[in-house]
Image 1 (cartoon, rainbow, N blue to C red):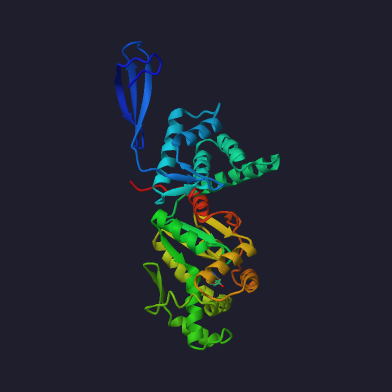
Image 2: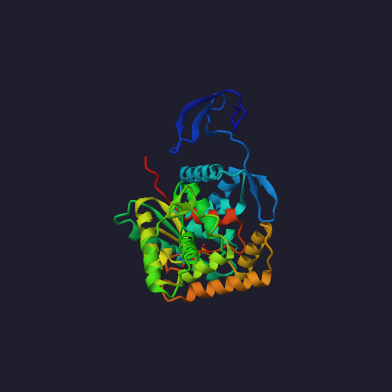
Length: 381
Ligand code: DC
């Protein structure tokens, strides 16, 4: 390799070291002509990953660009180049292990934000101000408040950590919770628990057996003889796979009605707590962070405007070839929000310590990135 100082052709490797994570080899070299020393880095070449920018343009993922942004944010901060290289390596690894052929610039941005948050808080705020285009000083104050709040939670978390990791994703209907929760679970290798499907299963059984929500004796008897479980992403009611049958507008209505019955909630919450105690899980619903697992390590409130949620549902129905009308879908979304937020037992609300993610203007991948970037799981060695 040519010497970068004098262009001499004869250079020697003095020392080779792997970086801590083992993905990069760092070599110290000396030039035989001028005697000066320099460092080279060797990384594996893997198939090209594309980054989709906000305006839709695509360009190849370039770790140098990521590094330059981080170096700028860390200027005059007590952060070494080795630390920066480690951060860039881990971002590169997350990008390539995303399982996608392309990722959005938002996804990469969230990974950088996440890494800087742990590395140096001043660098984090600098980067966030550019990345999120802070318009005024208020935005800085808000971001600093969030940082302070997170530091407090991490301090509390460092006590006796529970064995299983629980990630709660609550939010109104149609916010994309199940799609996002499923992807987050699959990326982390966790189980995905769709608690809405449990209310749907009970609603389905009540309807099938002709039980009215007001008949508390019959509801009690039904719950005594009801078993719900999840296997390979399918929902089983009393041993029967009912996954497809519970996705109709009638069962949505029946689920919403039965979700107002306190006894139904008590029974389903117990089952959900039992599941979450035994395995790492991503659970989505309305009351996961407020009732089922108020001690969940990660809590998210995923929302989107009613209009956006209605358009997504409208498009889904149309794609399935179902006849529907946008105004009706919007009315239905608003009605369900009202019911979910105003029921007496465990109404839908954002937990005080949940991170709110508004997906109105985010793609699926950006929303997944926004969640994953806030999750720090220590992998067992
Ligand atoms: O998320 P979904 O649309 O599949 O939920 C079906 C119904 O169940 C919905 O009306 C809200 C209710 N539900 C609830 O009350 N609590 C949960 N944890 C999950 C769903």
